[in-house]
Amino acid sequence: MRAMSSFYIARGALRRQALPQTYRVFFSRSNFFGRPARSGPTSLLPSTPARTRFAPSPTGYVHIGSLRTALFNYLLAKATGGQFLVRVEDTDQKRLVPDAEEKLYEDLKWAGLNWDEGPDVGGPYGPYKQSARLQTYKEHADQLLEDGRAYRCFCTPEELDAMKKLALEESRDPVYNKTCSHISAEESAQRAANGEEHCIRFKSNTVAPLVQDLVYGTYKSPVPLDDFIIIKRDGFPTYHFANVVDDHLMKITHVIRGAEWLVSTPRHVALYNAFGWEPPQFAHVGLLVDQKKQKLSKRFGSFNLSSWKEQGILPIALLNYVLLLGWSPSRDKKETSEIMDMNDMIQKFHLRFTKGDVTVNSKNEFLQKAHMRKSLGENGDKESVLASILPSLSNSITQCEANRASQEDSEAPHKDLGVRIGPLVRSAYSTESPGAAPGTTSSSISQSYLQALFDMDGKSYTTPMAYLKRNVYLFWGIPEQEYTERLRDQQAILDKIVVRESMGEETQQHPRKVSELTSTLLESLQDIPEKDWTEQNIKGIVGPFIKSIGYVSDEKPFQAWGWKFLRWVVSASAAGPALIPSMVLLGKEETLSRVRQASHVAQHMEA
Image (cartoon, rainbow, N blue to C red; front, side):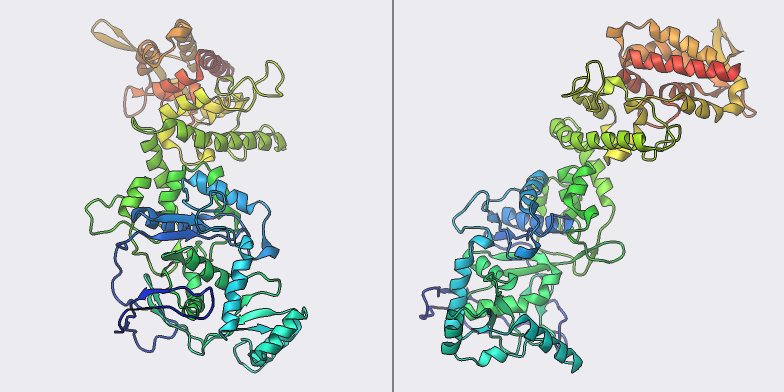
């Protein structure tokens, strides 16, 4: 065990005092070539405030893998009283997606992650966008050139391709053969001054340095370190170089990132050593893979954050979901519930991650329901939930309407909803919309209607389409054909329907037709004033009648059927929320219209 040291390196204005560093001897199993091994248990959290960063490249959009990386870094900073920053790594200029950076900020804020420093909020170590830091990288590359730890490479792309081809033909690793490392510093500087195109390579030692990782323990590269490029021919730094320089200058203490970067980390440690800097602590977390064990890509649509937003997932449910992909609450604590809000996540966070690939699962549905119940409870924030869900639900309805219009057979069940649908229910939608013709109904959901529906059935919400399917006839009318087919499903009992009537101490059963039942129901409901159209009043008036409806079966002289009858009238027998609250939500006018339509269908079938 070597003693702690603190020293200055005199050469170069960019040289800084190396931070005190304790060098440890780690035990490695067998020869350990490229295989990680635990060097001992990791602590749950560092004892001092952590400075962490999320450093995405705007070459694609945020997906759940990158959101998980951002969340892990965010939670570590907040759990230790430190700072979390966002840094945009846009050095790969050829692959930049025009709106990716703007979407990055939008998606992170939607998810509920805020940063202490970043391109849009500034900070003491900016700029926080790598394309604005080119001079900083040049100065640090020049320092390595001056120290003999880097050299200019004048090999053309064609020459490099030829070297690679030859190496493969000779069964050698296709690494750079150090051709330009022998050029003198004077000749190299002169050729560069003459405008000859070149890149800058790091002059590596043969043996790659060991990497100490909080997840994988001691990691030793299975291959020697090559002379990798640090400054490209276009003057932009490579990821490896800019990443190290920025993390040091921005005083990053911990780097949590995907395990695919573990094999590159020896390069980073080599750069830290060349500058005399202390590396941050690394934690490489398991890669997220799909059911086919393929790595998730930010260009794969179904895992992009935007697709999750379109599905109407609550931001906190999504954060809870990605947190549990490769991490779980400590077993040492009594409270191990996986349902967590942001405060819970911060309180429970630790640095014990799962090793190995993590397959994405469907736990998001369970978490969505759990957070929906919590949000719609007495102490929940209903308004923010509705604000989060309304756009995606409105978009899904608009899409359903568009698909209906494009459907060749207008009489066939809707391809998304699985049943036939009528016109939009007027009470469910705002009647005023920019550009809408006077007297027409737009496809914009009424906020008050949606809130009433969620008060009644919000806890069943998972995704917009699933919610529309469950409540299809609270959004759309019921076509006659649906009434007809669902009543035919009951054909076996239609001539056995009876109504019980109490005559003093005796109870008598009288045969009834479905059309007679609808007529009685209509008369009862018509007598309820509009202002008294409440659950209590409707139940008090029609409840006894509904309970009196049944049919005679072989097993029982009276088999209850009243509530099934009412469900046929109100929702064409479609499963869904409670019936009388649904009638209240639909309103008196729409409910009576459905009773009349059901009566017409019954009369036609009985004729």
